[in-house]
Image 1 (cartoon, rainbow, N blue to C red):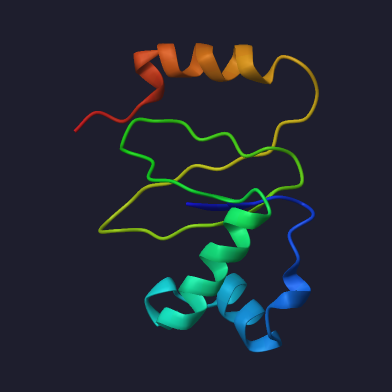
Image 2 (cartoon, rainbow, N blue to C red):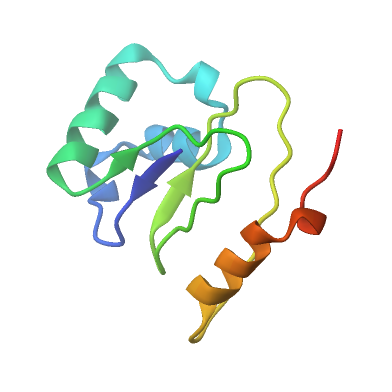
Length: 102
């Protein structure tokens, strides 16, 4: 995952780089772009993380995100507004019936 804050300076990326970031595949990102994106992200509060199977990642409101999948994955996304999200997410994670069994 690459997480970028709402105030990330996308204007410092070329139009082609912005299109690649949002609509391209990460395997096509050239090394200079990866290096510049990582540098901008670290200066402006961005994160890069690995989310192992069975873990939940909560993305803050209005943050940008990009995924880079390695192998076959199943992702479930949703949007939840209002109070109680943390409680509901914790309850879902604790319920073994929520997860697929192999």
